[in-house]
Length: 367
Image (tube, rainbow, N blue to C red):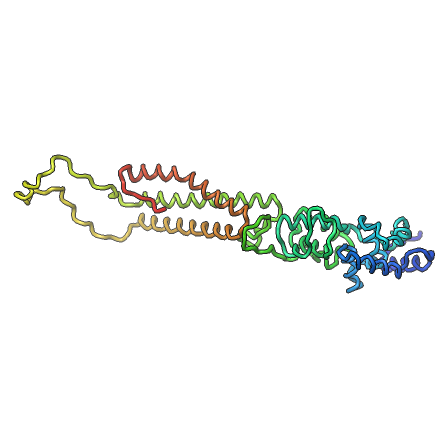
């Protein structure tokens, strides 16, 4: 029983050469395809097919066979990039290869290659949502379907940095099979390239920013929403620690904070005071107590106050670093959280002041 013939890359190239050599004179050949590519990429160099052409020109093994063949590269423009099919340089390909099963089998266009309009849409959406390295290379608007920039390389750079973004679904599909997989446009191990969000020292919108840690970089709207909530709650916790510290100071403060009241009864006149200087006007003061080292309970209080101080300092500096991302959403979440936390803890502090110190005290809150 004869085994079925499997099309290896080398056999595919050989069959493609045989088909081109035996095709009618009007059929598209490698020479005509190269001329069409040159014309197409001279007039519109930003097309994704032109990026593949440049890769293959620099390295004939840049893409898996047969995707570096000129006919396959022309198909990347004249068949995949549907908006470009009406260009005159596509006529030969359209007539000879678009509906030719043999041509499509031996020199197919690249699989899952995003067309120019899709690249323009996704790049604009990503760069509007956040500012990242590479966004400045392509200036696009909401209605753009093409730009004279290397759109495929820019799209690759953006999605390598943030592969979880919804706009990178086309990139994942392209990199999931040949010719994308194994090319320089896709990460070799399927992971991100290590590109980092752009650090902007001015107020800006967007969702991608470092938040305290290298691994805390929201990449989707849901992750950003959780980050905003986390900043809001951290600010409330900070205000709670501050209130706890104030209440602890009230509890540990000496009880002799109440202003002394005059003794009851009639006060002596100045004349009687002058005649009888031995009569005391106020109760005698007790002798000053000797100073002692803090007891065990005293050291516990000192440790508690120091721990609270370290915790509140850690939180306040963390909140400061969050604010210094200059991300508008994170800034507002932090400021609103501080305000809400202050409103929540203020009645607790006032109640503690009345309960622990007294209504007639001279206790004053430091801040």
